[in-house]
Image (cartoon, rainbow, N blue to C red; front, top):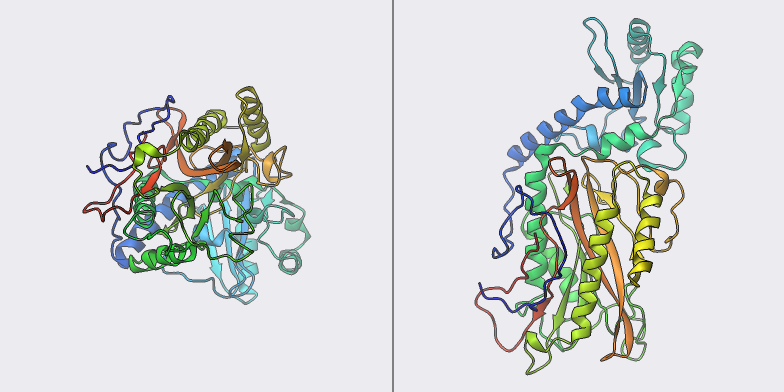
Amino acid sequence: MQNSTAKFVVASCVWLAGAALADATREPQVQILPSLREQGRIVDTWTEERKALIPGILQKYDVDAWLVQISQREYAEDTVFWALKDYEQFSARRRTTQLILANATGNTASSYQWIDNTPLLWSDLKAVLADQQPRTIALNTHTELAFSSGLHAGELEAIEAAIGVEWAERFVLEPMIAVEVVATMVNSRLGWYRKLMETAWAIIEEAFSSKQIVPGETTTLDLEWWMRERIQSLNYTTWFQPSVYILTEDDCSMCSTPDTARFPGDRDHIILPGDIIHTDFGVSALGLNTDTQHMGYVLRPGETEDDIPRSVLEGLRKANRLQDITKAQMQIGATGNEILRNIRQEMEKENIQGKIYCHATGEFGHSAGTVIGMTNLQDEVPVLGDLPLLKNTYYSIELLAQHYIPEKNMTVNFPLEEDVYWREETQSWEWVYGRQSEYLVIDTRHKPTSQAQPELEL
């Protein structure tokens, strides 16, 4: 394999997962999506597997029933609708109501759904409640958590008036039900999630190459829109606009020192030799979303990969070390704030300056679950940071390490982001596809016949 990447592998201990994707010599490839009809079959299978887990989740939180007012009106869906809907549904209809029971008795089903805007809905609902006599009925009425607060205030009043005091008195708030339902990624999803991650890697590496970058001509916005178009051409989509930053001399939000002489406030910046470039990029398909941040280095005329400054390599190595620390501290059951504090303590011991801002991903780009720091909250995150870390989900390990670059006379932020999944066999978090441990090198001395790719660290 042609390899024009920086020969720099972080010395860190990682599990070699038997289920890992590809060997380190394989270049990431774009994965072609199946037909829409086949996508529908795949996604609906995953959804049914998830729904089958809900009674057990209710039992875990000692709740007898979960009443989900999926749609108060058309286009006014509860957030959890998107995790429970069929592939062919684009929105909810009329008043869509779902009742799920933790321990259905007799011949009673464990799940009921009504799509109705007449009083018959309420009489049918009350009949099931009367038959099953749930002691507690959870509603999505949390004041802070997006995935547990989908019930509109006016609709709550309508429910209470329609079903009466007898049942309204049994309403309880248990926000972790909705959080865990949305967060749970069934095992059968991982194969396709890995393919989406590989596709994201492949697009980034095509963008950060001499195929797309001509130093002194190509701009950051050129690359952003090329990546967006590339996604569209593959019948994928995305959940946010791709971004490209110049870390060393840019006035971007990722940079530590703005250069107002070179960039007087505009957003479109010309990429030049010697730049460290960075992208935040994700793809969406099959009800899944990825989130990745990689970096590249633009060689100066006459330079080879061996000429990349040592300090620039050290910055990436430091970010990789911070990934190791973060992944090791992500203990199931600990809160995001507890994990954040433990990471910060390790950073202090190793004299690493940086920021931690990890989040759940998968069903949504920023999905249900605890958060481990935010860019502006490095001590604790109220509410969201108090949730426990769940397993059987996907997380984006998102962070940056700061390192001084004497060649630039500035401290540079080195941001990385890679997605992980919980592997039951090893009781640990594993990289979904891999992680970047070498720069994507833009060498414009010649047009490569095969695209240079960074090796995977598995």
